[in-house]
Image (cartoon, rainbow, N blue to C red; front, top):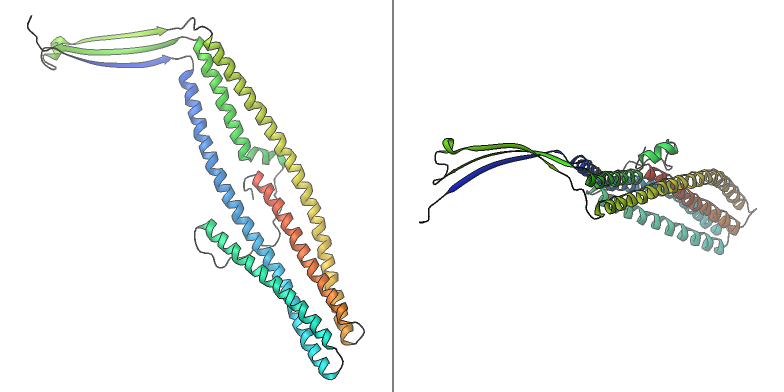
Length: 334
């Protein structure tokens, strides 16, 4: 026969009615993955907040130490002027002046170091805040203790939340794997037309079909059971990791709280020692003026002052760092 045109148009709509829980399982997995991305974003933001707050308190500690060193420097300059006068009157020696000048140079060096550290911190803050920072309002030199118990910190910890979200994904994967044992039921509707021209006399040549379909894989050679066992193993591994993470963070919390208590005691002791060192220095300075103590004795007392100031800054830095570590476990909790 001669060739001729034939057009067949068909519209088919299919919808699954029951898939053994696969659709709901994959929906929950997608939601969990979305939550995981949100937790990753929150983790990055928490780290940025942590670094910014830490920089503010580091700046406060530097400013406090600088103030103490500048007070000592002012005392040294006053003492240096007094020695000049005493040398002119024959009450002091040139070696006394050399000793005090050496001590002044040492204090100036420390002041310059801390000033340079301040500049570096301003550069770091400018980087964190994405704008130039030249001056900030300083907080107290000590970070307030986190007012949260361990249970709340564990609940808010982003790493734990990520692990719990991963656990949920693994659990849903087990459910999806088990769907291989269950039937799938779907419904469909089909509408079509055929003619030697496209959609020609479509109303006269129309046809439609409505139906349901049942699919059930009764034997798969053991692949379904293998998938289920593999999914259960992954779920068990994630559960073990979650339990270990909780125990590890609980241990870190106990260690950090113990360290903070220890540093609090050191700070209290060093503050008392610094106060005593200041009093002793004032006493030795007065005794030097009355020729009852040597310049070497005065310089030794100044050295003890500086030693206590630097030691106090070191311990306060360590204490602040531990409090920030506690905050970091609670992800920026105030």
